[in-house]
Length: 323
Image 1 (cartoon, helix red, strand yellow):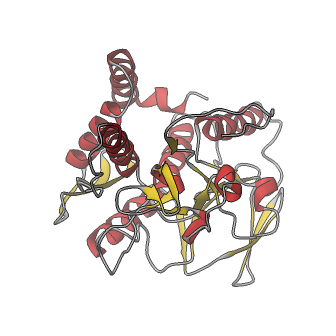
Image 2 (cartoon, rainbow, N blue to C red; image 1 turned 30 degrees about the horizontal axis):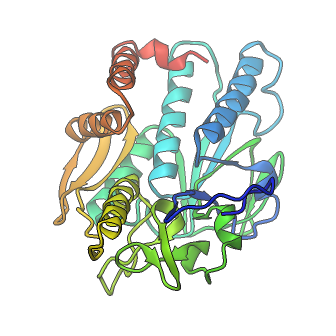
């Protein structure tokens, strides 16, 4: 393995788990002006940007121009829906506590005819109802044609003034995957064999969001880019490497589908549990979402920290409006 500084590393196996990067699909201005949400650094950058705009507005210095506090969220998947719900609730909290009036308008946009496309039709309706109830505007079957510092243009010839555009419109394999050698598959990701190895590259495993992992389902030939797929494929690759080192045959990856879930807002979430997608919604799904995401954190201290912070946010509504 040759590094950018010229150093060369050697080993018996290579595991590529380089993750994803935002896919802007060639939309002019999106890479320069939109805020993707695919890393902690992305989230912090968006938080600081919004905090600055809100603090300026609350101090009476920055809310006069059109769209100063408005936010457009691109993408109706879990990332877009969860972000829209959180921002809509933030604006409601700022208004109800008297800290800001008028507040910014939150708009979510997607080219498809539904939100949360991989969920059931019941979930589509639930998400739409809850976001609308929270004050968000939902624009479906509309695509973004350009992003500017102060506005967003759409393919229905409309424009929304906004200084904040959150991009949850898709992802592709990380930059390092583009120069590795193998011909890339869908989404700029590396196509892997059932045991997570790369054809023609002995000893190389690719896992997580940078991989197109076979699902065995002809209707959906590759597994989705989910945290659960990444975790399970990483563990499986390690086990296959140990099998190889022990001169045993590798085994095809078997994904255990525990379901999918999305947070929409306070006491509002949707979960489809298990392979047969048993649906749960409302407060129970909300609690399940918190529990699952807390357990995915590393270490007991981090989990306890998360639970205490979330409990404070839940019972102290005003705390959610602190910016």
